[in-house]
Amino acid sequence: MLQSREKERILEFFQSNGILVAPDALNRIIENNMGPMIRSLLTSEVLDSGYLSEKQIHSVLVDSNKTRNPYFEVDYSNLKVNSSAEDFRKYFSDRYEKLKKIILLSSHMRGTLPISKAKRTPGKLKVVGMVSETSVTSNGHRKLLIEDLEDSIQVIIMKKNPISSELILPDEVIGIVGSVSSGKGDPVIFADEIVRPDIPNRVVQFEESAPVFVGSISDIHVGSKTFRKDDFRSMIHWLNGGSEESKQLKYLVLSGDVVDGIGVYPSQENDLEILNPMEQYSALAELISGIPEDVKVFIMPGNHDTVRLAEPQPCLPEALRKDLPDNAFLIPNPCTLTLEKRKVLVYHGMSLNDLVELIPGMNYSTIGDAVKELLKRRHLAPRYGGKTPLIPSATDYHVIEEIPDVFITGHVHSHAMGEYKSVRYVNSSTWQSQTDYQRMMNFSPNPSILTLFDLNSLNVVKKDFKPTY
Ligand SMILES: [Fe+2]
Image (tube, rainbow, N blue to C red; front, side, top):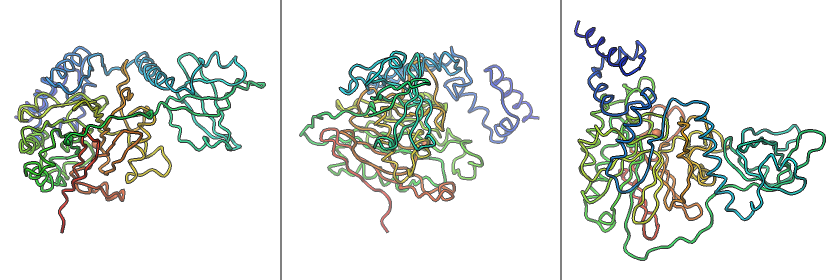
């Protein structure tokens, strides 16, 4: 009787919010007594903005900007989820225009023509286009279809040209230097050179003062049976230990999947030590409370967290802030932080899965190479419509407009750090042991590593908290 009343209450609640619930989902909510939690989350914050009205989303996102956070500026208030064809047009136009502007900074691209004009221009020319198709001809030459805002044209890269082996991703924006040959059919550009937005060569100023570290950790997965809480506690112990390095750590970035969540994959409940996501966040808050008060802790959501899956993801709900100490700051995904005048770009990293699929020979243990491919394309998710759900808003928030000094990603549970044209990067370590899924995929994570970037010298230090037997 009580259950059927609760069922009615939950159904009424979802209906009043314009949400349809599958019978299985409803039963699971009742069985796990999750009704009150869902009501509190939905009434105060976004559980999944995809189901809320534009007005509600607007107010929630405006609220999420009231994060009294002096370290980043982001405005998602014009973002809506129920996208139309016009939204897609605006989204891709914005992506194209922003990346074209960066490509045109290259001296190789002076005198670039619109594609419609290039078609009527014999001889050498330059165009900028978004790649809409890639294929290989029967003779082994590369064939692309590229588009600008008005027109499209085929591009042939002859197999003898060294650039024919270059990785070209669908939806990336590239500059082409080549010549048009119309012959009998449609005009075609024979490419000599590909120009990417890329990170330019630049001189970075280094400060000679004492180090100021930003630490990077990711994918903590609190609530999972495989969360390595002993390693995490020994990191907190080190932070409080008073060593020279730990005293120099002023910022700590948690780049997503801070808890394991629930319902992220089938039968996840079998892998959970804490079933209720609110309790998972409370356990996280308790751990974070052990971090010294003078360390500012930035918490980003990932695909396991309690916000909508589609990117850009807003900050974690304000309702979760109550347990967190005052030195914890909620940040959205992606986000650029300004720390000690350095730009620190943080992205959870869902698009890395797409890159592993698209790049021949790429795997999770060579993920640093995939991170470099994102920087080369100045885009955090170059391929649209793969495994990375993206909201087609009028602004493409995944374009890397500002050159970061430090680029932090996570998500794949590997650990890779390096430098690409003055940008220090890390694919940050997880705090979760190998899961059954990873065992099945024959992937061994590299957990429990804190990566430190000195914001003055940009030197990188790795601290491993796995036990030494
Ligand atoms: Fe993730």
